Amino acid sequence: MEFVTAADKTRLEKQLAEYHALDKVLTVRIAEARAQGDLRENADYHAAREDKSMNNSRIKDLEERLRSIQVVNQTELPTDMVFLGATVRTREEGSGRVELYKIVSSLSEEGEFEYREVTSTSPIGQALMKVRVGMTVRVDLPRGERRLTVVEIVV
Image (cartoon, rainbow, N blue to C red):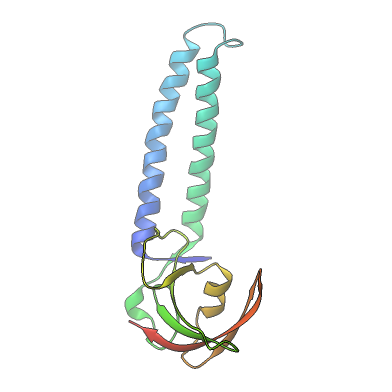
């Protein structure tokens, strides 16, 4: 299950509606290409069928994703626990390096901020989810293990 914000869910639903609208256009395009005659050598027909197949695959993926997400009501979350939307100040054990992370859904759009955005499904995001201030977590990354202590949750 993936946690998302209400805005992320709305964005997914809008994207799904756009794919459904495109599906109708592709159906008409296939019918028009079919009317041109011989289907064995009809490049328009084959291209339209391929486009429709890819569009149907996207629709199926989005519908499955919408079934498997859970919208987080941010007003009901405890303020001392890391969750989706939280900005977290951590200190790395050993180096003492302090970093800011914001936990976002994998659907969030990127931007330039003073913190690093990590998705809730990434190794750092998974390790920090549901952790309270003062707790230390182990994060297994491709470059090796890191231990991060949650110093504070920044609002």
